Length: 418
Image 1 (cartoon, one colour):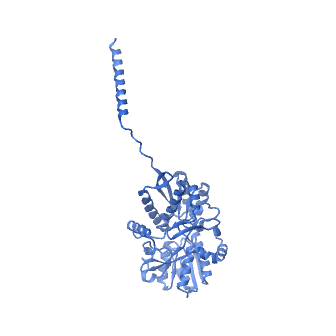
Image 2 (cartoon, helix red, strand yellow):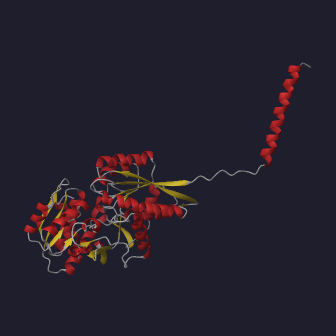
Image 3 (tube, one colour):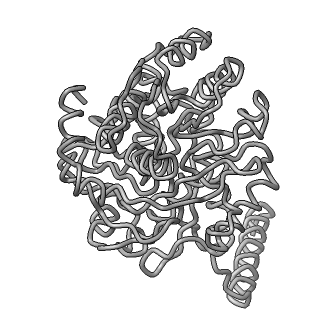
């Protein structure tokens, strides 16, 4: 046998031996279980995180982040026999309709989200045709955005602009001498609908609107506006649902120009307003969003507030908890449906007769106004500024008011073409 031939068999024998050894090692080694794949449910956060309306978006993102962290720390959401972690994907639409539509397309087509949180107003109206086409479940803070053309748009948390009527009722009860009002708000869907609902409430209570102005969103000088309001000699000033920066400027002008009677506003972000006016002057101003350490609210509200304030001091506002509340409702729908698919969740939620709301039990309502029962309506707080805090002083039901005065509201909305 040649030496080359012998080497060939020697190499082959070595290879065979190596294979046998490796086979024995593998067969004797313990089985390795591959890591379990983590299931994820993606949620889109499509709201203004910068710009004039950031105060109605960014604090809500902070609150939603707390909710996501708490849910994931507890093991996620139970979806049938599986657990899903929640991933939130924010997109800053700057409250610009074209940017909102870009964000909607990214979240649905690229990120594959199962649910979208939005603020409301013009950005919701701009994105709804796309969301409806793709059967996406979307939450708004403004039930007035809803119509028969927005079948999968729900309002699971806030009751704007309906709750504005409750504050006006409270003002009339506590200040029966009020006979006239001057009201302003910015020229956009939010501002216009706020004025319309307020007008209906004032009319139902016999309060005359002696001054009304829709001002441009580009307005920076509010002194002439307040001067004109005071010239109408009202008993009450209303800021409608003006943007937070506008509210601070309007309130400052009211103080500078000597106003000493009640003020009502959809929201008063006290950290902003009290930087411009004395706390004792603002005492008694009426709004709708209690601080969540209020003794009249449940303990879970106190815990959420404490966590929020510890992480983002001086940023608490109306929306700080609202997007998180929407997520809690969505979670219920996911668990009931055993699925994260938007339409399955939507159907599961609508099958529930009542759903827990931070202010009590909510029921689906809205067909009388918008043709769809997609607002999770519940009584809503009225607050007064007391000792530099928003104190909860009453709870009011819009549905009760509507059952008595709905004809007035319907007429006003038709006159205003809303």
